[in-house]
Length: 115
Image 1 (spheres, rainbow, N blue to C red):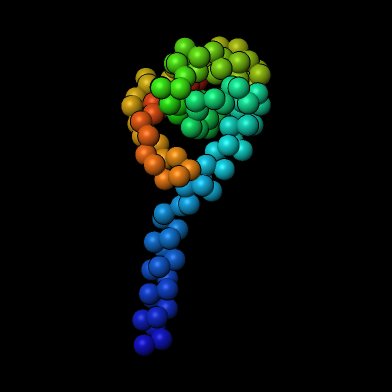
Image 2: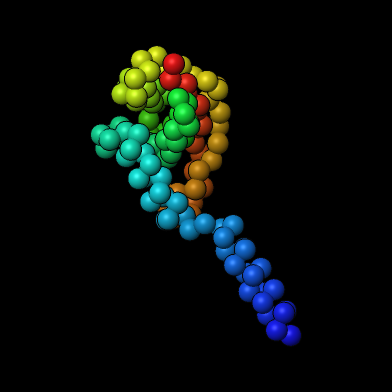
């Protein structure tokens, strides 16, 4: 019986670990985006800005910000890290993002390369 309770507790912990708190995920994204885009106005309309080496994954809400605006912001980021040329590494694709309140919203994911 004791092993069944331990197994049940472990399974519950595993399931809860797979379902992250949307508010905590939002807070982590905000901290990361502040490092990439220090100016708060540059973060408007973005869901995620995730740097990987000289690449940058950006997820944005097309109803709040245009692709050309995101391109300009990323160009500024690339210049700040010493790589003056920003180009799209992977074409924009439709995605969905979970907001802090748990609601799914349509978004666009774009990968940039700072050359």
